[in-house]
Image (cartoon, each protein chain N blue to C red):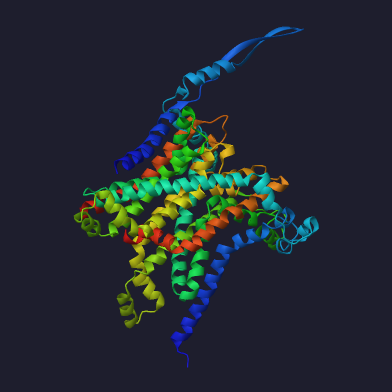
Length: 333
Length: 293
């Protein structure tokens, strides 16, 4: 009992502390050394990196040098300075927005938020409609239908997106069909930012809709029959019954789905790799991954700063829910 | 004589059927397609000229003489050392599931019988861990692991995955044990059982449905994980998903694309089997928290 709790605190708290500490540091400046290079035409002095000293420095202080909160406001993160300069230098709004979207952090912010805002409502709607229509099926075909429906969800996002990517690739079935339809052999979903975003969002809906479906489907089984019967007697048709009886009953469930699917969407990462969409779509998770993926030069400080900013974002998102849960617990106590 | 309502409901039925069939095609077709394509050569699966080649295997016949070929699988598993990645996945998945379930059952049982109100804090922890992008945690683990020189090996990855998984497992099992009546183990203790005996002889026989559900979720997490395994394992120790991604690195290299296709199919197939068998438990687990809350 106690060990479990200790372990949990250990594993939740320590990484967060660790990234916070890491985010305050930045890699060492490379110490330089003057080397005299002599050749038949005389000697000249050159400045090079002192590899040995650098290694020694890294060994002594592996975290790097202390940088305070400067990493947070540099060009790759909040970039206050660049924003301010962009704002005062640009005359039109579009000029400013182009500066804005060239900053990696805001680029990622825009994509992550757009993705979340588009995927979540579509997932809820599609899941609800699916649950309604599959619920109406006969028992015999229900099982296989549900199985096929949840397939997109259980496959890991990387594989799911790859499977789709191979199909929409210019050499895949959907990609070449689209090229034929528009009679444009160079049309490619990878080519433009907008198309890539649409592809990613479509993928997100495909991947998350099954989850919404399952939860709605289970909740549909708990809808009480009496109000529906009463509605039938009162002459409500099918749509009115759904609108005025079923939907109000499922509203709390919909809120739950919205919350979970927002959490999942904010950390969108693997589809970006799967669709090789790094060029036009970047998310927070991708920024962190990008800082860490090269074992030779890992930007711990930068990755950690992005992580902290992400956690703060998620925290803002979660606060209303936490407050609500807290209140409910207070009431039942 | 058909009444107005009958006609209406028949219309609805037709719309409904069309909708479901469309959805099923969208949901399942990509997998069927990839499965079919994995038995062909690259020129067929990624053919510029005619997508029908994936079915007819035009180039496959030319290159190998048959309509189906296992070349992609053979190369990926042996040359691409996918078997080694599969072995790693097996180890990671096995240990993550065992350890999470062991800690989860004991912890969940203790929590559910304890007089204090822990539920809220487990819920919060589960929620926070659910919400936190895994990669932010990984970036926290990475640096200490490098310093301690325990980066890149399987045991640390297993521990991290267990840690990420634990709050959810604990919460699931906690709410499951809550449904097991307290009187059951109390009656045992009246008969002279110790706490552990009560757990062993009274709770264990009835806990399997909950444990299987929790186990399935741990399994899916460990099996599907990309972020943690890709960042915390050295290249030689990669599990299946990061391995698969490494095949894509050399994008246009001819063989590797088919390696990736074959390994996607090999990695997905066992998962589908498991889901087919345990569909009910997964659905009940997913809805456990939702419908009550």
